[in-house]
Image (tube, rainbow, N blue to C red; front, side):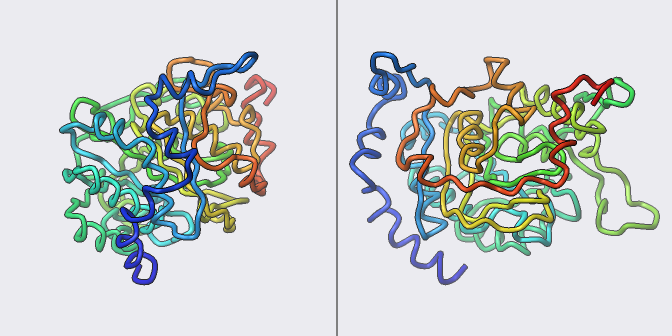
Length: 361
């Protein structure tokens, strides 16, 4: 982290608060006023704001993406603990995981608004979260910002239920209490722009939902031998496209981020969320409306939002956030200036079969 992060902090407060005149003007407007300002005859009023920032410094664009919402974020956090949830699918594959530079920008922003009660929390698909944090350099950030590192697998959990498309029966799963306690915790999803071989794309919501499913200690460390235990994450995947999309949608009622920060500095295309290839895009998306952030993320990836089942369900529900692009005010950069057409997963036809009845899928 030396070359990128040492220069970043010195320049955060000096340069990142300047930005463009348009971004500053939008930052000064309360959400309702910003929506009215975006309204014109024949134009639908914006109901959500999403920040889109581009640049060559990964930590700084994360910081800058949050600046337009500075007062709103500070008020929303209040005295709550901040739970920063990275997207660490695996503990030993950097491309599939949230970059330490992205977390650096988020932590520096939280520091700038006086928020210090912070935990970095995760339950990766394989191995120990703490090992992954060390591998990716998060431990250095925890020391620098006095944040606590937490393995969700060792914390309290609640029981929720998901469906498997093969038997259509409810299955109990253990979900991390820390990620669904809005009274005491403010959850930030530090996600990435990535394709996904089962659900199409994975952005801020899926990072929280699937990350909430916990596993037994030692699971994934060894592929054989006694005491391996079990993981509840596969149950969330629901046995196929119908199951996973329905489960992520259903669980999103209680499991969703309070703040979405989606790192697109280097995304993943193709056979994601683990084995894909990198896409250099150098952008960052942020919003207090996670669905609006994921909607913009899909646009940046050149992916048809209507093909993504769980996000389409959330948009249709009407109570999860704003999924209508015409009602989203994008602050900062223009989406069309930064779109990259991501290579879709080889399993795309299967991924999108949720659109057909299960009997004929």
